[in-house]
Image 1 (cartoon, rainbow, N blue to C red):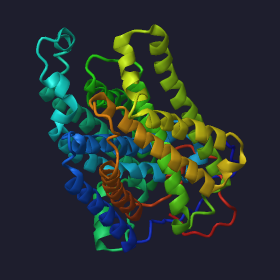
Image 2 (image 1 turned 45 degrees about the vertical axis):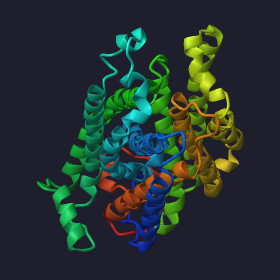
Image 3 (image 1 turned 60 degrees about the horizontal axis):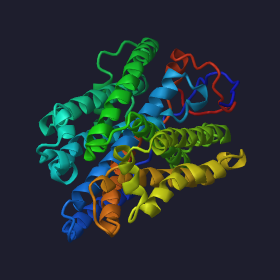
Image 4 (image 1 turned 60 degrees about the vertical axis):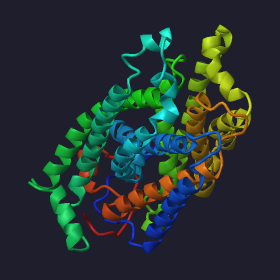
Length: 435
C-alpha cells in the first residue's frame, strides 16, 4: 500500500454524520417496497417456495456484506494498516446491521421446506442417511444460531473496544451523552484506555478472524450447499466467506465515497486512500475468480456425474445468463476497469466498479441457492427478488447511518498512538478541535 510519512496528528476532528431525515425516509420507503413485494408476489404459480428463497438469498448476501465489512475493519487493525486509519470506521459501521441479521435468520428458518425439502423428507437414500447426523433441522438451527451469536458477539465486542477511547465526555444532547457514558463506564484516563483497547482488540481481532472463517463457512454449508445434499465441495465454504470479505471491502469503499463530502473529510481521505482501496478491490476480485475456478476445474476434469450436477443446473437454462453474468460482474469488468492506476484514484469511478461487484455478489448468492431446488423452465427472478433485496437495503441503510450519526468517523490521536500508527499522513496545519 502507499507509504505515508507524516506524524500522528495532535488534532483530529470529532465528526459524526449530520442528522437528517432523508436517510430515514429512504430506508422506510425501501423496507415498505420489500414488504409490498412479498405480499404481492408471494404466491408464485407452480413455485410456492419462491418468496422464502428470495428472503434466504438476500439474507445470505446482506448478512455476509455486513460481517465482511467488520472483518475488513478487523484486518486493517491486525495488519496495522496505517494508510487506512481514516477509513476504518466506515468498515466498522457494518456491525450495526448484525443484530438485525441475527433476528432475521429466524425468519429464514421458517421457510425451511423451501430449501431443505430433499433431505427433510428423504427415506431410504443411503447418501442422505449417511449425513443424517449433520442434516438435522433442529441441529442446524442450533449450531447456526450458536455460531452467529458467538461471531456477532465478538464483532460487537471489537467495535466497542474501538469506540470506547474516543467518546468519553462527548455528546450533542442528553441521549447521546448517556449512550457514551454507558460505553465508557469505569474510565481510566485517555492514554490507559487507548492502550487497553488496542491490546484487547489485538486478541479479539485474531479470535474473530478465526471464528469468522469457521462460522461463515458453516453458514455457507448449511444454508446453501446442503440444498443439494448429494453434492459437496471443500472449496465451497472458503469461496463463500471470501466473497463476504470482498463484498465488505466494496461496500466500505462506496460508503467512503458517498459520506466523505457530508463528513467534510476530504483532508483526511485523499486520492492515496482511494488508490489503496482500489487495489484491494481489484486483488480480491482476482482471488474470488481463483477460488471459484479452482472449484470448477477439478470437477470439470474429474467427469464425475454426482459432482458435475451442481454446475450443470446452473449452466443450463433458465440460469445460463446469470451463470455468465456473475463472473463478468465480480471479476471480468473490475479486472479490466481497475487494471490501470487512474480509475482507482477517481472516487466516482471506483464506486461504480464496487457497485458492479456488489450486484455480482448479490446474484451469486441467488445462483448458489435457487438452482439447487428449482426445476422449472422459466427464470425465477423478478420483482419479488429485487423488491426483497431493496427491503434489506433499507434496513442496512437505516442501521449503517445510525452508526455513522452516533459515533465519530475518525479515531482519536490517543488511539492512533496506542496502535503504533506513527506514520499517518495528515495535512499540515489542520485546525480541527483537539480530542
